[in-house]
Image (cartoon, rainbow, N blue to C red; front, top):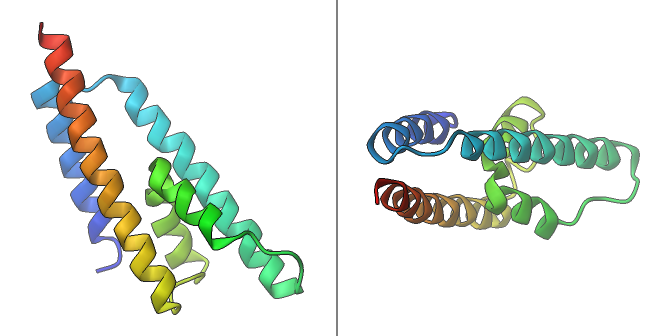
Amino acid sequence: MPYLPLLLFAVLYAFATFAWALPPPVGGMYLAMSLSCFAAYAIDKSAARQGNWRTPESTLLLLGLAGGWPGAVLAQQWLRHKTAKAAFQRKFQLSVALNLALFLYLAHGLGQAGAT
């Protein structure tokens, strides 16, 4: 079940690509942001284990909101990081929903602009 958002996003992305001619750089942006977000989670997990300075939750949430949430989902599952903190998970899920809404709005707009 934790990977369901990734599957749904893949379907949504494929739809936007074919229906609205989504430009390929959008996928590259999501990939780059996901890798950055995964790295930020990994660094924070390592810092937590060592008792060092931590990455602020707001930074992790903003990286996810900016398109890195697929990497965050993978990091949360693979690294077992930030999965038990309910308050963070609610904020994270809201940031994913906001990103997807913005994605749909912009993807449709890009497709309409390309059609004219």
